[in-house]
Image (cartoon, rainbow over all chains, first blue to last red; front, side, top):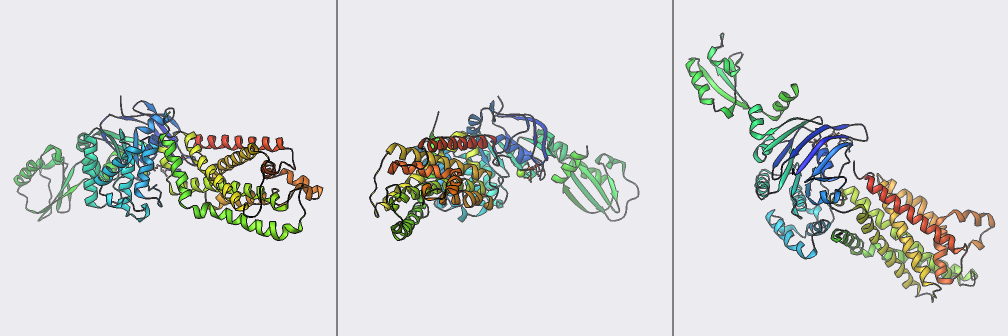
Length: 303
Length: 253
Ligand SMILES: Nc1ncnc2c1ncn2[C@@H]1O[C@H](COP(=O)(O)OP(=O)(O)OP(=O)(O)O)[C@@H](O)[C@H]1O
Ligand SMILES: [Mg+2]
């Protein structure tokens, strides 16, 4: 049984915007899965349909075989959501927010305190438990939303840009935290714009573009497909003839520079250096450029 | 069925208005005292007894109903509207709460606030005059049903409203004027016959009249009209709320 099953899901908003066009995919139990895509791709729409914040237009969505519409109460109890936009009661205290949300998910009063304490301590917010939400920094509010999503120990954790507006150090510690949750068995669905975040955390990645899934594969396969390094070799003098030994690197000549591409996963960097040395070209400097997410999108959407 | 979630939401809603009791319970009591002083004492002494009841004794049931209506309506409408505005209503939507549970949790808080306000107004009224009760059953019926009715109406308004102006339309242009003109301060028999007919189209008149019956045992309109109307309106707004929640009207995109 898959943790999340999405079949032929289409979403058309009231104003006619088609946000999702017949997408299908499933996420296995225990997986750490990323939805990657540019602004407006349909990531939040997908998540909102999973969690009951948006109505689907057609298709089926199941969480551990529970239909999110027909068996909505069972389905909801399996999920914790960290939404993209802040949706906390600004005037309530951190502790109360978690106390009542624990209640909504059926946790008896007597068990709430210890759960709240351990979560807030893990996230470094225990000192702030009696602060009102609006007195917290943006990063702290995000952590309160993470604590809120985890208060009922959901089987599925859904993170919609969980590290937006969070400093580098906090981001790293949240990554560690999410990885540990995943190792303990929580299925995690993450959306992000940061390819590093997806790379760092996820086993499989789906790339969403204009309401379609344009690629879905394991991290390694996708990286093999997408991640290439461009190496710019600047020469002391312009080059007239391209040395044949460099053709296999997709070489292109640009004034007095050579542009070569390699796939770092194939570990052929030293081979390239050998080949370069054998050409006896006089090299002034070498620059490397990693493929960015934009390159990935361009590459995939051109197809 | 597990009710922990329902109780948690109810508790949050109740604590929300109890925490600020100075703003939610006290003001209607002060308003009632002012009305009793102005109309009951100064002007009321010039108005002869209505249906054999002193004028002050005549207006107190109406003032009570007025407080009940306003409190029930403003509790559910402001709570839900603010939750919608802050996005925190999403907490209820992603939780395994049924639509019924959400509606009833909000409603219980509205009814409770209305009853506390009603009791408060009754208490301050006792400082000015003695009060007799004709029918406890009718008092209970009207106070519970009317606070349910306006709690549901408040939920429906909050769901429908897209901004603060829309939120206030009903309170300002419908509920407040209809309440003031709803027979709190006069008996239909005191009006010229034309206006006596016009006010019969005001549903709040029936609520005030039926509730007053519970105290003084006398009505302007037949009691069963009031009972039936209150029942019909309560069911109507309840069904409206359930339908709106089920559809996710302006809650789910
Ligand atoms: N409530 C709404 N009404 C109408 N259109 C909407 C609504 N919400 C989203 N959309 C549209 O649906 C499309 C997908 O939006 P969505 O929020 O799912 O994107 P996203 O992938 O989460 O983007 P981002 O990375 O910016 O968060 C966009 O074209 C957006 O304008
Ligand atoms: Mg989004």
